[in-house]
Structure formats: structure tokens, C-alpha cells
Length: 513
Image (cartoon, rainbow, N blue to C red; front, top):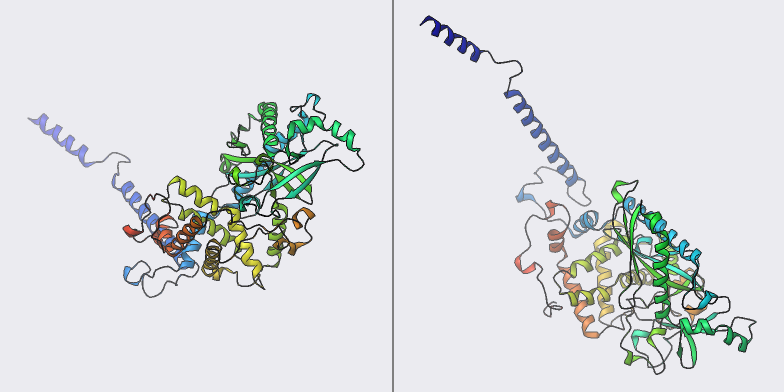
């Protein structure tokens, strides 16, 4: 009896005295305090962000989060927020991606030049060859690329044999020519200065048989044959440098379908920058230099679609058609405008947002209609719209500050709609005497003699009208689309009405205003 009592007292004493470090309530209290502090910091950060968002009202007598006093953000605020969260491309990441592309393409082109060009000609004495350099073109190098730095365009200039000279000629001046061919060129062979006619014809015969086709009794350089040679030569050059590139990246070359340029896919395996392990696709475009920074490219660009063969004049072959690349002149024009513009001008931001508006308008379209939408509203067409609006103004450097972002966007959309409906003509900014690039200096002769090219004339009128209607409808619904698809969550207070949610549409909707 006594013994049991002593044991019960001991057990009770053990329960009364907690073991060392067994204060279980204090850690829970610390965790709760840290969670509360984190919540307060997040709310403060959100309040500061609201307070200093451009154009938003200052925090005053009423809480910003009160539904009673919540004000719908203006279009400028929505555009600014969408640009920062969905459109703007980090210059840091873009710079590293361009460095990767420049390094890999440089090694590939140098290997192609060192390898020479046996081509289809025995000995290769009169074959094409790589010149050894490359030209970076496109939106990534003009500061208006959007979202991800994962696609690039690079021109690879080709070197002609010494005994071969070219005589380029624009097709736009020919009467009764379909609009699809107005931006195309043909390139006839001619004897270089001082060459004897009969001896020249005999000496250049191997080159003419390997790279040329007959057009109206003269030998013309064939874009199709040059492109096929270019792809096979790239494959052989890549096999030369693939082993040396294995430690840095994985490189594959995809031949272009339907006579399109090949695409070089680059996936960095290791990099000095952890943020830049992006898969990049680089279109390698063969180019023939005509002088003064003008190149003929194979094949014609998608912005100038080539129609059916029945539309070609008699004696003209589609495989002899070339496109013209005027990226150097366009970069000079953009630089000239940038020099005249005040600090903080938003015209490049407007171009980026116009591309984003095009992408929003493509949501819900079936693949065929989406392809047509993207071809009509190509990035080149949108850039030409911006240049046309800027150069039509007497003082293009005025009125393009951030405060007029929404107003300028509406101006671009309405000008593009008028071009699609035929009320305005969207000319190529370089080709022809009326080219806008004449503002930055004299143009090469081959461009001055070319006829002005309407970039939208090649497309069917009904298709352009449907695109114009959908473009204007997308612009009118833009606030709802931005709340649904972009920006921070506080801009999406409620989901868009069911009638405004995108649905999969067979073709372009016909009931849009």
C-alpha cells in the first residue's frame, strides 16, 4: 500500500515537471507571428504598388480595396500593366540569347567558308560559297521583339564566282502583273566588265547549269536551286563543328518545308547565366548582296505571298523569283526617328503592344483562319504601319510620350483598319520613289527603280475586310481581354461575361462590328 502511494507521487511529480526544452507553445507562437508579419508585408507591398502605378489615384480617405470606392483602371493603366507583365522582353535575357546565337552561327558560317563548296560542279571552281559573315535582322535586333527571345533571323551572304555578275530587276514595273509578285525580283547573269562574251559563256556554263534556270532566253539565278545547295552545305558544315559544340549546346538543323529557309535549333547545355537556358530557333536565310546593304533573299518573304503559277506572265518561272531584304535601310530609318524623338518616346512600345493585340485577336480562331490572320497582320506589316504614321506627321517627335499611349494605339489601329479596307495604301517603306527611307539618305539604284509595292494588295479583299472587322472588335474589347489574359490579379476583379469569352471559331466571325 505504501509502495503504491510512493509510485503515484513520483509519476505525478514527473508530469508536473516538464522536461528540458519541451516548451511546445512558444515555437507555435513564433510561427504564427512570422506568418502575420509576412501577410502584413505583402499587403504593404500591394498598397505601395497600387499607389505608384502610373495614373492610379493616391491612397486617400477610403481604402483602395473597398469595392464601394474601387475605380475601374483606365485603358492606359491596363496597357501599361499588360506591357510590363506579358509583353516586355527583358533586355538582360535578350542580350544573352543574342550572344549565344552570334557565337554558334559565327562558328557554323566560318566552318562553311573554310570547307569550300564542291556543290554540283566538279572541282567547285565556279560554285557558290559562304562569304564568311552573317547579318542579324528582324525585331530582336530592332528593339521591338515581344515576350520571349526564342526566334531569330540571320542572313548568310553568299559569294559568287569571279566570272559571274548579276543584273537584278524588279517585277513591279511590268503591266498586268498580279499584286503578289510586285515585291519580287529576278536576277539575270551577265558578263563582268572586261570579259569577252564568247569566252565568258563557255567559262560560266558549269555555274549556269548548276544554279540557274532559263527565263525568256537568258540564264537567271534560281532561288530554289540556291536554297537547296545552301541547305546541303549547312548540313555538311554543321557535321564539321558539331563535336566542338557538344559541351556548350545541342544543335540541330531542320530543313525548311515547301522551299523555306532551314532553321537552326540551339539548346544551351551549360551557360554562365542560369536565366538564359532557352531553346532558340534561328532561321538561316541565304542572301545575295547587291551593294549598299541590299540583299536578295530566297525565297520571297511570307509578307509578299507568291500566287499560283497561272498568275505568272508567260515565260517567267516561279523558281527564279527572289525577295528583297532592306533591313539595313529600315534600321537607319528607325535610328533616324529615335534620334529625333525625345527621351521616353513610346512608339516602339506601341509597336510591341500592336503585336500583342494581334496575338489576342487570334485567340479562338481555327488553324486556317489563324494562319491567314497572322500572314495579313505580319510583324513587317505592323512595323510599316508605325513608320507610315510617324512619317505622315509633320512633327513625329511630338505627342509620343507615355501619357498618350492609349491615344496613339487607337491611331495605329484605325490607320491599319483603313489600309485593310482600301481607304489608305500601305506602301513598302523602301521600294519605289515614294519610299519613306529616302528621308535618311540616297537609296541604291535597284531600289529607286523598283515600283512602289502595296503590302496588302496580294490578299483577297473579303479576307482583308474580315480581318479589319475582327481587329476593330478586338480593340473595342481590349479592356475585358486584358483583365482576362494579362496583368496582375487586381486588374481581374471579375471574370469576363460569357459572351466575351473567346470561343473556338471556324473562320473569321461574320457578325463582328
